[in-house]
Image 1 (tube, helix red, strand yellow):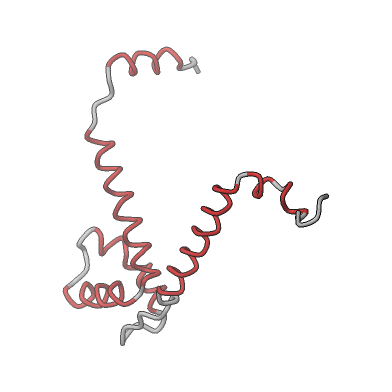
Image 2: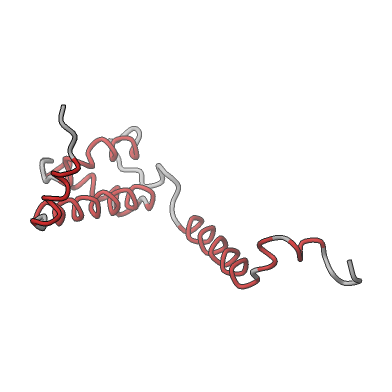
Length: 122
């Protein structure tokens, strides 16, 4: 090894300088973003002993609009205050959106025939 060279220069991440810099920046960004979000349970709502567990319990009924007015308001307050639960809510909302889109789209007849041909008799 020549003077001034480090042994890390031969590592896969050092060989792709741009990619390793992106990973470092991405990691730094993720850490900064995580530090900015409240920890689970930080969005404490009076009346809920374990707010994140309760939020998880009511998340599906909340998305289905099945909660009464008081429960809905409590869930909204917690989601407004808790980044962790808000992220889970956004994820579930997106999953539902994709499922709705998949249900609406018709399967092309050619694909349906190909799938039927792949079926093995029982």
